[in-house]
Structure formats: structure tokens, C-alpha cells
Length: 353
Image (cartoon, rainbow, N blue to C red; front, side, top):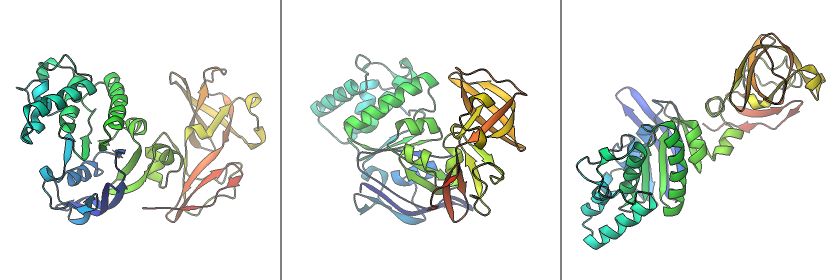
């Protein structure tokens, strides 16, 4: 295993930034470190980089403990959200900086920099200064500079935060392709779930200093292990009592929290429902155009739920009487979580915290 973190705990005064965080990362993987602001993501990144030392726990690179090893001896490449380029240096010299520090020969530096300029799509811009580049181009220079010395681990702290939405989408695809080509183990911090889901091979979900779940994007989306993960990744509804809904009357866990993704809810006119006997009567409260579909908010038994509806179906309006069919529910309590199908219970899976 390339990177192993064991029971990492870090406090700043009375504030506990991370608490008992453990994970393993395979070589060459692109890992998204995802969570809300202040959850501990950047603290974990800084501990891996050697910019902070854990109060408790160990960090191992290829089986070697690196807790007290300084950053320059860890083989780390670091990309900041504000680029941190040298303003007085052109593109070529910015990328060459780390190689110069390593005292590579001029021929080695030229060959490596030209290789990276080609790889990052910066050909023809070698002599430009940072202020002559767009935000996306500056970020590509920052990536190239970070990987020029061939680090064993690349760390990215919200690398696309300062870039507009259109360019950010383009850079996501470019980043994934680039990491696959160069094969560097990479961890990037983000609070943007769409970004993490699209780019990462695996995600680490961090909340209040704890690791909530590690897994592939689809594993985390389809099999959330905690209420936080279920509500943080993707959109969700929360129900106070599922026992009043058809198909779920006898499936409740004691003192459990119920979360439903909008795609688990079918909302339609009575004549449209394939299984009207399993549906509830509801009233449309709001309808929002989402571009590719309608988001429909309905009220059922005093509960507010929202789901999606195709643009090809008749348009619903506030006040319309509809039927609501819930296909699946995530149910959590302190001891376990279950995925409930309408009328079918799946064996509980233990919660890992």
C-alpha cells in the first residue's frame, strides 16, 4: 500500500481538527478528500505534506513512517488553490524551479520541462509571465511545476476553486487524464461533491474531523454508511416517520433516521402510476424547472418530499392532486443501517465510524 494513515489526531488548542482518522491509498490512485468547510480536510493534507505533525497516529509512505520527516524529504508535490506561481518567472522557469533546486543538468531540465509543457497543453506559452495567462493556464503551470521533480505523492488543495465553472469542468477531465498518464498517487481536497464524484477513483468523506466513509464514488452514492454521507453526497429527503408509508409499515428500525434520494420517489397523476395500490395521495406544493427535468415538491401526510419528473410528461402545478410512490429508503440508527425496498427488507449492514 502506498499511503497508510493510522489513527491520526490533530488539535489546535481546544479545537480538535481530526480525530482517529485511518485510511489506506493504493499507488497511482486519484483520491478525493471531500467534506464541508472546517471538517478537517486541509489538516489531513497538511499532515501528509509534513506541514503539520499529528498529535497522535502514524503516516507511512511505502511502509516507512514519515511523521517527523520534513516536507522536502517526503517526495511531495503541492498545488495550492491560488496557484502560488512566481510572478517574475515565465512559464518555462516556473516549471523548471523544482528541477533547479534538485540541481539537475540544463539538458535534463530542458527535456523534462518541454515534456511537461507538451503534456499540459502549454506549448507556445513558454515565455509568458503568469499575468499573461488565463486562470486555467496558470493552474496547468502549477500542476506541471508540482510534478516536474517526479514526486511520489501529489497533493492538491481545492485546485479549481479560483477558476470559473466552465473552465473548471474542462480541467477536471484534463486532471484525470493527466494523472492516469503519469501514474502519480494524488489526493485532492474539495468541498464540491460533483467535482469529487466526476474525478476521483476513490473518495474519503470527512466530517467534524472524522472519516465517515471511504470508497469509490458509486459505492458511496449507492451504499452510504452514515446519515451524513447519505445527505451530503447527492440530494436527499428526510422523513420523521416511515411507518405510515405503504410498503414500509413494519420495516422501521427503532430511533432511526430515514433518508430518501429524490430518484427513489415517483410522482405522477393517478392514471400514470403502474402500482397505484402502493402509492400515497399527495398534493403538489411547488414545481421547479431544472433544465433536463422538473423538480416537484409534494406534501404527503404532512411530510415535504421532492422528486424528479420528465419534461415529456404533462406539467404539474401547485395544488394538483398526485400519487407518490417511494421505491427505496435508507434507514440509519447508531448500530446499523439498512436499505429498504418497498415491501422488501435487506439485511442490516454494520455502521463503520
